Amino acid sequence: MKLSIVILCWNDREIISDCIASIYATTHATDFEIIVSDNGSTDESIEFIRKKFPQVRLIENGRNLRFAKGNNVAIRESHGEYVLILNPDTIIHEGTLDKLMVYADEHPKAGAFGCRVLNADGSYQMSVRPIYTVRSEWCLALGLRPLARLSEWFHPGEYVGWKGTSEREVGWIVGCFLVVRGELLKSLGGFDEQFFYYYEDQDLCRRVWEAGYPNLFTPHVTITHLGGQSTQSKFPPLGFAIDSYVTRYLYYYKYEGASGVRSARRAILVSLVLRLVLGGIAQIVSPSETGKKRQNLRRALLDWNYRVDPVRLVEKGEEPEMEVQPVGRVQER
Image 1 (tube, rainbow, N blue to C red):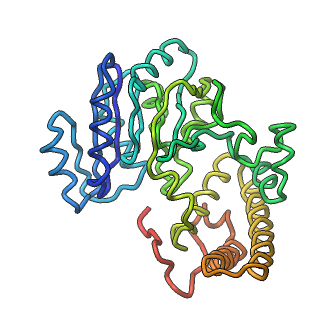
Image 2: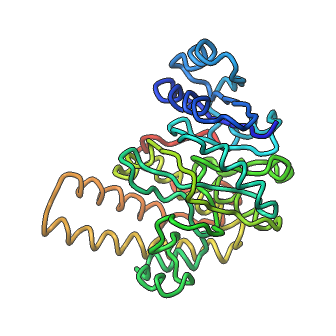
């Protein structure tokens, strides 16, 4: 088996059909299997997939295991030389998987691969980034992004000025489309399941690098990611936003220890304060209901980050209590 395609499903009946159909319609020279790991869908996704795509292997987890655990279940059952982690809201273009398998075989020293990702309107969607560090947190907080055009030392968590038009080694590949050598992926234990919301893909790619294998990006094959553009235009419920900070601290503690995670918290506080100030000025100049909601979210996040001790959060699970349970808060990790 050349390629195992792992798709995580959670109430995705409306979109997963087009994703699976695009794989079968555009892949001609690659021996592949599709494994759908279902995280307790209640919208009849399982029944729908089983009826429309009987050749797909279905794993029923019975509950929402989140991204890392849900994918790991399928990764353990995969047989491919390569494993593709694929979002259900993606569309595979003609020849993408065939060409990417050729590209991967031509680069035997690389461990993971990404391709050019487009929004629904055909515009470029950022799908690869440099590894996040405490330094990049400070560069982001202090608005040093323009300096990244002179040196990537100042990168704020993105490749400034680069629009995915050339091949290159990259820090990490976004998990909407991430190909990893199967043997390597299993030797690394798949995704680190402590990252229950964000940072799963970055952590995995960082471990691929640490194992001695670069991550490569090629612009010569493309997919469409339908969800990427719409989610960028919204701000998340408070609970999900807090969860993203929890995993952010887990990530920095794992790689930079107690001093590193405390420095990251200071950078986050500076960033939130500056964004509040600038947002306040914007509201005075041109007030809007959206701006007001965004400012309220920033105040709540600043309050939570100011009161949290990131080391105790990571080591003992202690975090500030909110007066009102945030919408979207995930209790089970």
